[in-house]
Length: 280
Length: 253
Image (spheres, chains in turn green, cyan):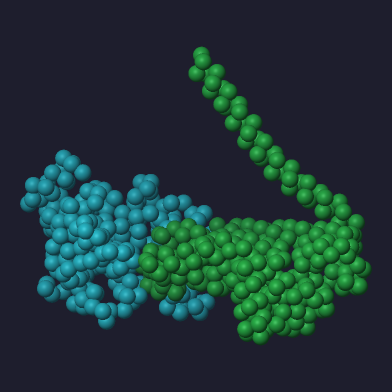
């Protein structure tokens, strides 16, 4: 009897704690979204998106920062994703567990733990100063690409690992070379997972602030080339709020940022599902 | 070395790390026969198949002594083109492994690897292979749907078609009927007898009955040893070795 009662008590307490954890997570998320969207949504008009900021961002819209964000993210992904996926393919398909692969894996794990401001500092010293790229889309994009590398590598590696070995055996037994096996069987099957990793990286690139200010600058002028300095939406938000330029505009930018990330996620999820459905 | 053999295995010994999987195997397989390799689990059957097309190369820490000859050429010679060897010795695995792509793409996988991509030629190859594997009639109207939607038996015949599309000289089947119902099994066995006209077939049967139904000659493997080989009739009715007799009469295994 006593044992039974204790057991019920434990069950009850555990249940309450778990529910509280889950509910508070959701509550915090809703609070943040509510706060930003409540203040920001009224600012969002078509003009807000299509007009560039005027007088430091006090007036006008966010067009140039939208372009800056997109350009920076595209550069980061275009550089980071091939290197990351390539590393994952190398680790999984071209080497066996060895000293080299352990060193690479340890390196990427360390990289994953480095604060973004350190990446910013590195980008500033190396790309901006040393390679003389200045504050630019290129400097910022390359810095971000290094920052997202660990995410891309580990998600790609996991999804490559999950491709059944029997698929590889089939490919090799039909006279496939290693390259043919990787490109025709391994990567197509790992693609949804790889894509998820890239999606996370896009989110991180869009949201990054510290590393971007140090490497891409905070210019509000419309960029004209890869060597133009830019201001991303996150940086814009930070500057508007931090320097008290316009809280209204800051909230508008924040809301736009949230909607942008949400939209990218939804489209990507739709694409992944379509791809998976197409193959099975 | 016996003349006129398709494959000659000579003093072949194989190790995974420190455990020995095959011990001093000597075996000759004749052209256009169905040779069946049978024995209890872990007797080295799959290892011998995977040694013949060197799929064992994919496993780390393996080594071997002795030699295997295909048409008189040592397949472990460094000069041997591995991809070509594997095209000449096709293999069907014990579990149906349709790749997650369409039926057509599955069968066309091998030909495309050697740059046969022209539409009409490829379509002919695919049709011929599917016909040989007795699958054409069932799938001809849905070649471009996913192969994963086929039943187990159909998938296994698809795997056979995929291997046949490369027109290998030797066909190795590792328990091709495990997990299949009797009807699918019967149709695969029928197919094998048909294929014997053109191919040398090495079969690891699903059970002893299957071996006696389709094979010409048989070799009994036990713990990495080739205990005895001979015609199917002799092996199953008058085995020379006590261990073979015990196995075929069902005393163990």
